[in-house]
Image (tube, rainbow, N blue to C red; front, side):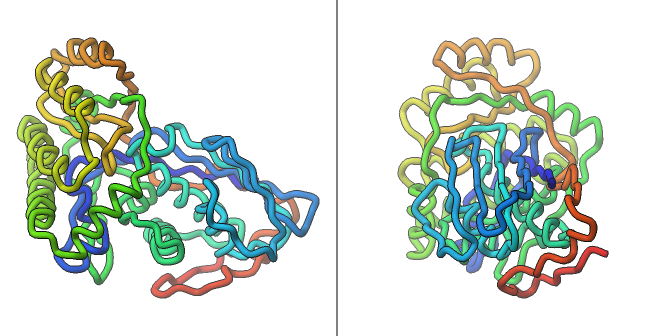
Length: 361
């Protein structure tokens, strides 16, 4: 049995500039942190040698296919199917997946699922991949092989963990841990609030609009994305100098830009919720992920949090406690069911450069 997990993330600033149609031309920049909700993958061998079973607790879905069967891409399990197919798993296997947050709620759960499954399947194949290798392989499968309209920030945040500034350009991705004091980190954790709006959404629709606008070099969209990137860089500087009030205001200004990038990022109800939070004492915030629903992240002084919670709960929102997570993807347990099993399974069916896979002894 192999048990792996990867954290989900909240993005503070720069979201949307991690899409290839933007960053390949102008460079992207995101400030985000992993949080202590996780996507889990459990791999177990089965007696049958000619099939792989995939079970998802999140989608209450189940699929079973012979190893040699071509993939069908029109189900909720298309992502784990694609990753399993990539690794060309030999021998029977059951894959069980579960996340601690609902899908489609803006915390990057699909990226965390991909990262967790890549780490687990690589380990199954005798490969102990580094975070950058896991993240890039997850991105390759989601973006290049599946054609998903997503960026790269979720996979890198899940793979590395911690509080980071992540830079994207056509030459690669750089992950830079923020240089913040323990006092700043502790205070930030206390002042961040997370509320579930009660709705999920298909982020692909919003992301396709943004990708198309960037591809067409729509002037208004590019101006807003440029501003979002600059505000993200200013957030990094504010956090590193310990100026959390400035950080909160920068989140506010970034949301005002983000909500107008393309249609669907916000709506009347989300605007009402955000204004209610600010009126009750929140300094700044945003709808997480692509927008349209999911979670609302707020920066709020401790003295105002009770009032903010009461006001938002009256609108039907639910507060979810959370903490910042320092660790990224990891294998928590690995029990070979047969002596020498690890390391004997073939390498992935495809080879993608620049990844340099290293066999585990």
